[in-house]
Amino acid sequence: MERMRSAAWCVLVACSAPAASPDAAVDSGTPDTATDDAGGRFSGTVTITSTNAGPTMGFAAIARFQAAEPPPSCATPFSAGDCLFHDCTPVSSAPAYLSGGAIEIDVGGAMITPMRVTDGTYATKGAMALFSGGEMATVTTSGDPSGAPAFMLTAPAAPHVTVVDPPVAVGPVPIQRAEALHFGWLDGTVGIVTVVLEAKAAGGRVQTISCTTPATHAGVVIAAALLSKMPKGNATLDILVRSGASTASGSWDLVFWTANAAVDSNGRDLTHLDATLL
Image (cartoon, rainbow, N blue to C red):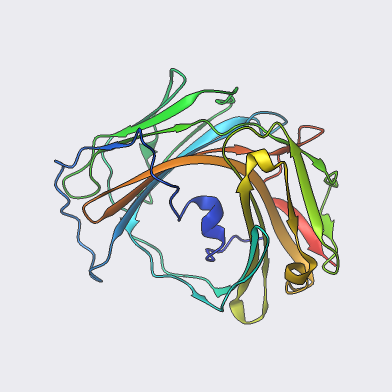
């Protein structure tokens, strides 16, 4: 299923910022000369994700610096517990990405250096898992006078969690829309567990249920009242753990996320799963 940029999908790809870290530091002396025709703000997001087990074991780092995107057109969200239902027409414009200078991410002494690629974002990946537990991760950027300012942010490496309730099926995950759905996990220590269930609806809309809860809560429930609003048919399901820090410099909102894919009891990565809404 093609992923679309709905409001709730931003929960997973870090369009929103975590609370500022007391360790955050920004070099405010870097001039901010990027221009936004709408006179709005700019956003810079660096995310490093590790998958600790299974055939997808490895890491990926991405960074994006851009003018803040216009929000999607969304109906009033519905909430139940730690979850929100969103019904949105996603943003379809292609953003113009700006330079953030050189980027280095230090994870427990391992240095990761995302490089700028053809679409203007930054990316790198590798076959090793980065997070074994307890590390701190620090991103440092040099900044660019015509783009984003230099900054440094530190966040704990996202912990590894194992989802044990319910056992996740091999193949498309069957989800009954008339019944509450509970996810329970082990190993939660720090960070936020994020669950996103997303499906395409009529008229080009995207309907999403997004749940965020501290990893220490060991579980989250998606209420039937929310599931019943989703359309029958194909969907995608993602479960991961995040930890982050943020700061602001001039017109820039700057965010650093660490993320760790949740796994099931067989070590299978629980991101980008196909699901069927029944």
